[in-house]
Structure formats: C-alpha cells, structure tokens
Amino acid sequence: MYTKFYEFLEKPFNITPDPKFLYLTPSHREALASMIYGIKERRGFISITGEVGTGKTTLIYTLLNNLDEKINTVLIYQTNITFEQLLKNILFELDIRIGDEDKTSLLRKLNDYLIQKLSQEETLTVIIDEAQNLPKDVMEELRILSNLETSKSKLLQILLVGQPELEVKLNSEDLRQLKQRIGIRRQIRPLSEEESEKYIDYRLKLVGSSSSKVFDSEAISLISRYAKGIPRTINILCDNAFLIGYSTSKKKINAHIIKEVISDMESSIVEEPIEELKSKVAHLPHPSTPKIIPLYNKVALLILSLLCIGLLVLLGREFLQGTVPQTDDITYERSHYAMKLEEDKRIKEEHSMSSFTSTVSLSEVKTDPLSDGAIQTPPIKTDSVSTKSLQTVSHLSTSSTSLEAENNKERIITVKKGNCISYLALKYYRMTNETIVDLILKENPEITNAHLIHINQLIKIPEITEESLIVTLPDNTYKIHLGTFQTSDYAQLYHSEPTLKGKELNIIPIKVSPRDIWYRVMLGKFNTKEESLETIEVLKQKGLLPSFGSHEEHEATPS
Image 1 (cartoon, rainbow, N blue to C red):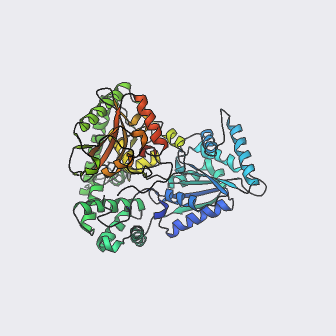
Image 2 (tube, rainbow, N blue to C red):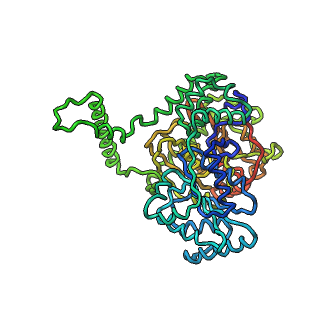
Image 3 (cartoon, rainbow, N blue to C red):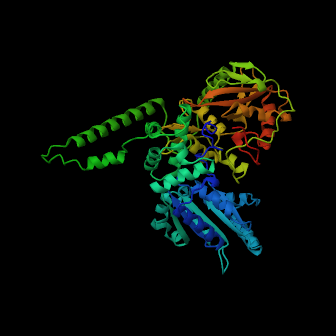
C-alpha cells in the first residue's frame, strides 16, 4: 500500500522470516557460524536460544540457504508431540514409507537411512524450531537419537532452537544427561540502540531507501528505545508508522507519528503486570505495624482490588455462559449448534456483501478505496494475462501434507504480549498473507483492526481446508473464496486459467482496519459442492490459492 508512496522496491519491515533481510549482529553472526560449524563437524546436539522476535526463525532459513547439498535437512516446527510422532515426522519428511511400526522399528529405519547416507558422505540434520515446547519426556528420549553414531562421528545432527524457556528446561535436573550431550550452546541477544538504528537503515537500503530519507533522527531514536532491541517490535513500529505516514501524506516519519503508533500498541498492553503489583503489595507494612501506609501503596492496593473484582466478574460471566476459559494452544471442540450459528452468520455476511455487486468490464474498473460496493467482472476469457504470477509470502520447504496435518484442528488461543495476527498466521499455518489474515478475521468478527489485537483476547484459529473456501448461497449454489489481496488488480491473474472459463469473479472491498481496504476475490457460481471442490483442487495444484501457499516460484504480483 505505501511502497509506491515512499518509493520502496518492496515492504521493508514485513515480519516474515526472509533471509534477505537478516541483519547480523555479533550474536546473530556467532549463532549462525556455530550452527554451520556444528553441523559440518558432526557435533551432535546444538542449542540456539533467544527472546521472542529476535530472529531465530530467520536464522534457520538463512542456515538452510548456506548448507551444501551433502547435508540433508528436516525442519520440525510442530513440537507438542510424542517421541514416536517426532520419529514419524522425520521419516515422512525423508520420504521413507512407514506404517504402524513401533518405536524400535522406526529407530531402525532411521538408522538404516543414516548408514546409507554416511556411505555417500552425506549427513542428516533435524532442526526443531520452538523447541521449548517439546515435552520433557520427548526431550529425554532425544538422547536415544544421539546414540545413532559410528566410532568416529555422530550420524545425526540435531539443532534445538527456542526461547529462553528452552535453557531453563535443559538446566533442569531431570534433563542433565541430555544437557551433557549438547556440544554447542549459543544465545541470540537483543540489539543495542546503536544496532537497532543500523538495523532500520539496513532494511531500508535493501528496498532502495535509507533511514535518513524517511525518518527524522528523533523518530529513529524513539523506535530504538521503545523496541528494546527486539527486531520484530521494530518491524511492527516501522510498518505502522509508514501506514500512518501514507494516510496523512507525510513523506518523512517524525516522532509524533511514532508516538501515535506506540499509543495504539500500548492500548492493547497491560501497563502494570500483576507480578509487579504483587511486588508492591509484598512491601506493604504488616497490619500490626502502627505505620501509616504511604499513598502509592494505597493506590497499589486499590488497583489490585479492582483487578480481583474484575477477574471475579469475568469468571462469573464465563460460568453463566457455560464456557471454560481457554489457555494458549489448548484446543476444544465446538458444539454442532455453535458451528451452525457461525456458518449461518458467515453465509449472511457473504450474501449481504455480494448484493452490492455491479457488472463492469475488469479493464475499466477504477475502484474507489472508500466504497463499500463490490465489483463484478464478466465471464472469464482465456486469452488474457499469464497465470504464472500468483505469489504468496511463504517460501517453505515443508510439504503441503505436513501443513494440512497441522491445520487439522481448530484452536482457541489466548493472545500474548507481542502477538499480532500475522504472527499467529505464521505460527499456526507457517505462512502469512492477506488471505490467511482475512480467514482469521472472518472467524473473529469482533476484531475490527487487522493490525491490533489485545492481550488475553481469545482468538479462534480456523482450520483451513478445501471446504472452508466454499460459500453456500441462499439459492443452494456455491462460490469459492479464491484469495484476498491489497489491490483489486490481482483478479486479473486468474483470467488465463482455463479451469475458470465461463465463471464470474466478484471483487468485494472489505475494511480490515480504519485505514486499510483489501479485496476479497470470489468465483462462482457452481451448481454443486463437488464441482467447487474439483475446481479448488485444480487451483491448489497450480499454486493459485494463497490460503494453501504456492508450490513454485511465480512472477511478482502487482504492487
């Protein structure tokens, strides 16, 4: 949206783990060098830890780009699993056929594979992201994999990457044997203020600009101080600053805009954590002490009391509604009745939005970004633009089967500090784009700003399947949600696809924030759900459905 306004080649502050934008501080460089060395020298276990948002996943993808072809890799990102499931995931990624074998048989298959690769002077590295979420019993059983070795070297290299909680687990008494087997342990530190300023300038130069061109010095300093060295926070601050600057036609971002962004972010952040309040209360005088309680302690007591009352009211309301508060990553099954209500609501929403359509020629479309109307294109011709140009944000090496396996459960999660919808999309779908964000927003109609969610807010992470892209219309016909994009130009990408000949495209403007309008592209009508599913399967195989990612490189999409 703002790239043309600021003359950027692309968005400089996306939160996706793109190795091109990796800024190597001394601790990042040391971690990357240690990973490459440990793998090439067959050191066995390697541990890399760092705070949320410090660039661990970006380092992983950078590592994958720097390993030679003799090193085979398996990336594991779903870590709340059993040891047997972990073994099956590894073998599946290696294209080794498995059935209902027990753990011993699975280990034998893995060992046979490693021996074969050793004879070819190849090695295998298993990279486990978010390793802090591995159950302790699984971490303990990982020691078994370290026994796969010859008299001279380890057959398998295991890279554990996670948050500081991983260090806490490794330092626990019951995992001391695993800790002893870790040959290399490195920590990624947050950026200093000076590094933060260089980080901002580095990313801007990659897109054809510089920090001095689009920020004043006070704005840069404010970003660096507030972010406290967390690259992801810097990205979110800068990205939102450019959105505000674009909407107000400010070519240079000043401190006032940064303060506005910070104010918006902090409106969703609890200013005083409960642990700090407990600390204050702990220092209050004992009731028997005839000492007057200072004013600030009275305030602390008052705040704590209000919080307790609020908690009781919330629990009472949850009890009366018959629901159970959910914790992060805990899934639950919705009742059939609730699912039916939500489906009816979604259908009504789609139908009401479609009722605004007007038929025009796509080549003549000039969309008013503030209009609530939908744009309908005529039946698709097959002699238009090349299909080879739908590009998604995700460039992952994981298979679509693994992705679908992870999406097999619908989740209710609790928002944590630093979360945003794009981050949640990356976490649960391993990719993020406008389509994924739109699907999450459709399941959470209470979210009115795609860039702002609140701490402790419950958010539904929907299962993304072929059927979830199908919309049933009141006349019992069907439409397909092809994708959601920042501009309506993307609809032209489907014109030369012969599968869609004779169908109509509907472009529906949707307001995803006070400042942003995206465009939902719908295809129809289909007389049967089976016909819809067949079309979805064809488009999915061709990489033309952003909700499932792209399996091949495509030309750049219109900006």
